[in-house]
Every structure is written in C-alpha cells, then in structure tokens.
Image 1 (cartoon, rainbow, N blue to C red):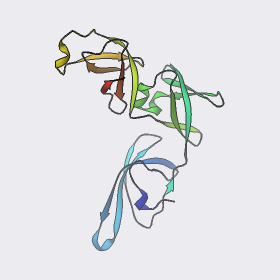
Image 2 (image 1 turned 90 degrees about the vertical axis):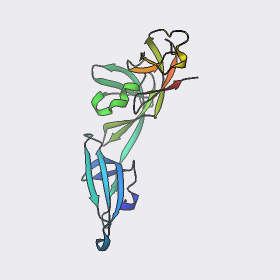
Image 3 (image 1 turned 180 degrees about the vertical axis):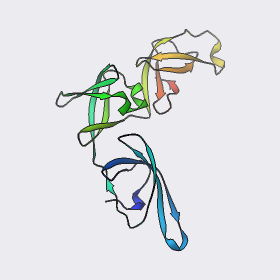
Image 4 (image 1 turned 135 degrees about the vertical axis):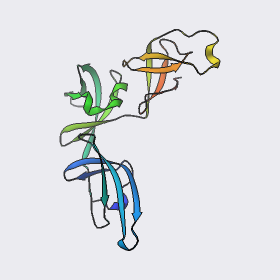
Length: 186
C-alpha cells in the first residue's frame, strides 16, 4: 500500500479498480487543517487526465501491471501485431491504445507492452530510437552552415524534419516523445 508521500511522478496506482499513472503531484499544507497531496492522474485505460486530492489517512493500492517483452511483426489496418518471443503467441493491439509513440516502432524490433488484467493498456518506449531514412531530397553542397530543415520519411512511415546534410540510407536518432530529430546516428 502507498501513502500520499509515495505519490511521485510516474508511480502507478489503482483507484476504484482502474490503473492510473501519476503525472504530477504537489504537497499542499492547509494550515490548521493538515496537509494534502494534489495530483494529476492519467487513466491508463482511456487516457483521460483526472485531478484528485488525497488526504494523509488514505492508503493507495499499487497498480498490478505486468510488462511483456514482445517483438513487433507488422501493421494490419489500425492494429499492430506482436509476438511473444517465449511462447510464440501473437497478439493484435489497436494503435489507439498504444498512443503516438507506436509510430516509431520498426518491424522486427522488441518492445515492452504493459498488461493489466490480461489486456494490453500501453507501451513503454525508450525516449529516443534510431531509424533509417527511406526518402528525402538530396542535400545541396554548402548548405550545412544554416539551420535549414527538410522533410524526411523514416522506415516506419513517419515524416520528420531533418537538417539538409541528411541523405537517404542515413540512420537518425528521433525523440519518441516529441517526434523531433536529435542527431545522425553513428
């Protein structure tokens, strides 16, 4: 059981049988009334954000979320198909459940899926991934001194803005949270 002092950013809790992730927490003193913890919680099933205040006497249950390491196979319509590497079971997961970060999963890569009561509820991605550029305009010699950018299509189909010196076949590092180019991969 968690006390209100354990409610830090990224902690997973269960409120009324629903898993939540703590997005933000703030300890507030009310003078003679004691202290409370004001939190913003993200519902892991629906994605909705909820603001809730907890009193010191409340005890919170940790969310029982398991993590499954699975290999991404292919996309079929709006569903992404994954395979459990231990049992070779395949599972199709709707793209809406996995969120925006699912755009950065390359075929054949291994990802961690979050499972709550046998149902996939989310995806754990690293903050950055390295992907191959499949289509972009060729860079013009001498344009490397400016901060001009051009569009590039990556192997997952995502279009990002990259510097002019990036060419087809190059591997680039992309931030999965913002979708921005970080650097050319070595």
